[in-house]
Image (cartoon, rainbow, N blue to C red; front, side, top):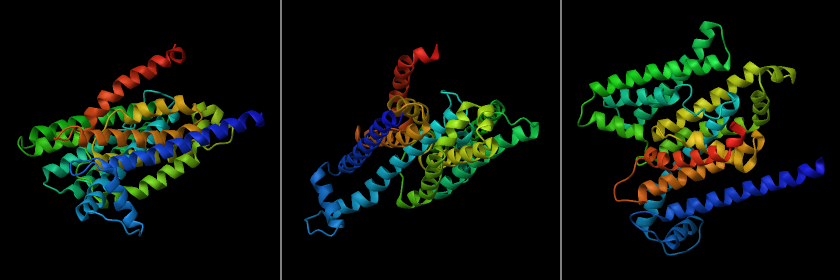
Length: 342
């Protein structure tokens, strides 16, 4: 058995290295694309100059790379990784391939929080804080309902998320109705469509601890997530504290989703489609599929955001592109997995 598992592990490691190299290459190419300049040589010279080498650089290009493009590129990588990883975790814990990161009402709560900040005339930083708090408050209410009903099963948690999400959608509708048509309503709608156009280095510093901490913890718990996906009886038989592990995993996934949505707005399909694609590449074992999901999600969002800011003179909202790409891709994945679903 060891001789059979070693080649499989080596193949998985090679796949992860390949995905990592492709992601680094994608980051470099994305930094090279933009309205000011599309010359990769200039970007390479800027990077080499920062490393201490004496090469000719354009001062304007240095400012554009490090103040405009690099924060946005890194944000797209982090947002894609967070949404994809949280989606994969939710699908494993709830044993449902149709589960997405906004299952527990995170996106609805974040949208209400951001809309409240817009109605109050707050700035971008405050809007992100409101969005994060709104998303986490929605998760808290969702997790509180099963406790009040004394029914802490996965099904009750999902139903609670549907209830909270539906209620918050109605609250958001009221906010849109009360918003000023010329200014506030447009800002709310644009935020819901998703964008990284206004991202700053400070925004990355705000979500980086959540990204590193929660992602690392989920990857370390990936083998326990495997046990959770077997079911409650099997988990208890194997000596896993089901309630504790499930709570930690759901909290980490919710934090990742809330952090991503707070800086990018609502972006659909990423957390639903990418986990399926990653499982086709690495199998259903979470110890292998979760790292793959993180890298594939980061690369996917990087490509989507690069297209959004370079395809036309007017920036395209991210959810529009993820819908155009994600829906057909999801249909293809379902077609390939039709034998498993029957």
